[in-house]
View 1 (tube, helix red, strand yellow):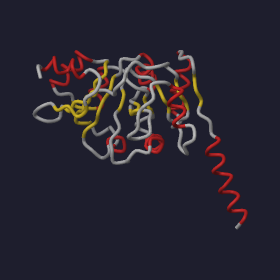
View 2: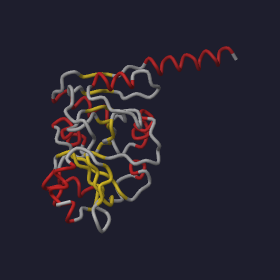
View 3: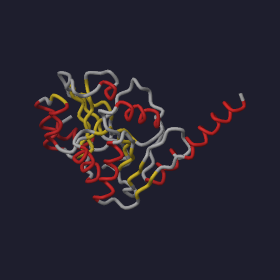
Length: 226
């Protein structure tokens, strides 16, 4: 009995001793290192044009589950995905004509398009829904990650679910460092300018619907005269 207790205690020590790698200077080599972590089923924190994102390969179920555990997020809630180019959007979802116009006008940018997903997009990332939210951030690091990975990565705020997202890598590290589940690597993009997450717009109905008011909302309203 004492042996079993000691083993369990020792495992807990190891879990909390696992360190998060922080890369202070983002270069081509460091982005490639982050992509290698994603390919191994790891989770990374990366800068975007709004807030820091928590990324994993959307086709790796265990990696996506890790993202949920890191955030303490309900598995029934969907995660947004991030792509590296406009043409990638139609690979993973069905673009309506209106959504296509918005993509051409605003992307890359702080807008999420909610579209009917293609079957190839796993339901463990869409929360079992037939829709998926797609981001194409106006950030070189975020775009390069998706392009090198050659598939989307998750694009959810790097925070504890329901809490504020820090605008610095150091702040993100602080909230995750003592948690049981942690990201494997943080790409430090400095203090980010975005104060709010992206604006989320649903294009799957007869009329477009703003699901979340965020960055670029005014530009969207002006575009549609609403």
